[in-house]
Image (cartoon, rainbow, N blue to C red):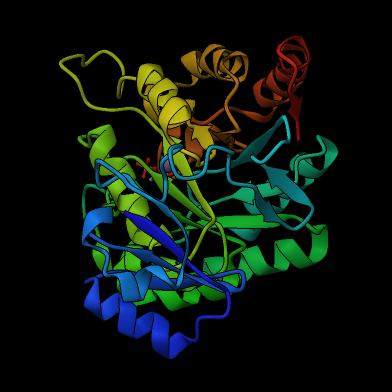
Length: 332
Ligand code: PEP
Ligand code: MN
């Protein structure tokens, strides 16, 4: 059950009540929020006097549930805004990994020319093999900071493990938690403590319930800005890299209050399929897309097969803008 206490309730009283109700306690706006396993009937009368509103919940999907907040969470970074009552579909683009200044500079110029506000590039790569390119680390973060300074772009980059989480939080505008790290509770809990949007990617073997429960770790830490990202799940199919779970995305849209971003690049794994899937995603009415693009995909140090070259990506942007108009949305 979720409880909002009256805004006159002090931190000390909120914590005492929280302890009594075995609740997670955090502050939102000017009041405290409690998430407790107690049922309504078990709340003592002395506590009820401090309760402003409460929502009984029948599952562990609580703060992310539409039954709690029926309106979509509004999430803002820089001048970019999604969710709430906007009809915005944000395109977040860039290479899988930042590899050099020349590469990221060329990408930043392309994004600026296409009126895209947010550049994504990985610095700490959660590779499947220890023998492949692992990312530029802090050097990459510094280049992203320079891109932000020179081009006024917002930055999203991934945290892979807790060893570099503070660096990523310091440099980035949005923290990406990848498919492999989404079960890491030290990352989830730390992201709950900060006040920056978090893009949480669904693990490829993760049920929708587990995915949203991971989001609950962040939300119950007091960070209300969680974006969910469907990036393909593993099925019996091997011809494509993963299976794009649009049914799952529809379920998330129906049942959760977090904006949903779709990532056709990682789902498909091959550049040839990405434009069609991206267009379908816009028609689907998602809150954003994550698309990998690289000045020379053949030379990419990670995910080479799926990255779009600039020509294909530029054409896709035009097509997506047209489709967005047809479904009452705006590509930003
Ligand atoms: C990525 O976004 O480049 C990435 C590693 O994706 P995922 O975590 O979805 O595999
Ligand atoms: Mn990638």
